[in-house]
Length: 371
Ligand code: SF4
Ligand code: SF4
Image (tube, rainbow, N blue to C red; front, side, top):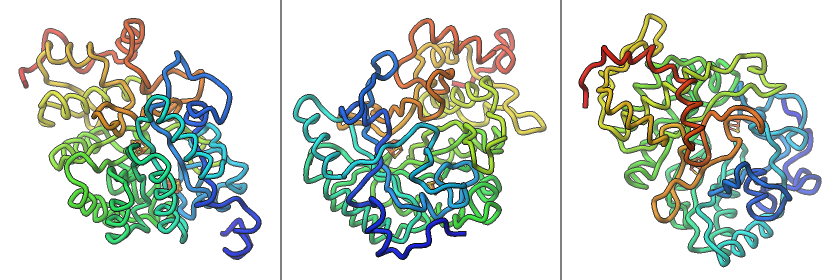
């Protein structure tokens, strides 16, 4: 049921709406000097993440999301992914981006769509505003696949977008249906999402399209590993997020997946994407959880020791270096890291090692030889 009773024209008067206004992640607001504060260990926020703002939040109804249609309260009062996303005039944000770009360099800007009848026109306009103010800053569009069209994908490219992100979130069809599709009284459709992902891949090229994937929505490890392998094969990036229950959402009482599971998933993803490991090297138990990683010990040690597997993964800057590090994207301030927004130091690696309990899935004296 709709939370806002005003017509679109009345909403424009009553609310501060996109494209004129935009939400910005707290980390990005701090980075641009729009909010006071400091990020942990001075890590910086590589990517300026922006979000469309409408009074409903989002007309979709994903069961884990703070912007979902049926979450109580209007979007103005709610938080999205647990930390506040303050609202500013888009022109002001563009100005701040241009100022920072002149001082040093802005890694990337990302504009996220929500489901709303105005979202495509507004995304194009917001892209124009940012691109005009800071033409050399790369721009990603995190699109809402359900309302996206081929024509808009092409227009976005003309307006300056070089990377398309898609919130697939659910790693497999059933979990997608239950958390985002009809099972959640939501509009999203698995096949429709793949149609847009594949079309975007054709239009934008290798590694210029990515799928956000959430660990902990009810999927199995096997489904995640199949998805990693498929996306790797198609040269579509896969960026991991970790489910964290959001108050007031349908999944508010669901537990997060254990940290050792998350670490195993991160490691296996890295092995498939960066160490040429085939998915057949991974074994699963009867519940579809990873039971054995049959990979040479040296490869495993290298993968773990580099630490990159446990960092946030996201779109790169103009030099090809990971830019979208999303501080607090998968955990609340003060909670343990799920993904590190900076390279883990020696102490972090020790923590990761103890969390991972690698010996349980890759015993030192009993590993295979996949390389
Ligand atoms: S489409 Fe995105 S913003 Fe909208 S409810 Fe789903 S996850 Fe949230
Ligand atoms: S990884 Fe970051 S920059 Fe890339 S689409 Fe996702 S949120 Fe946007």
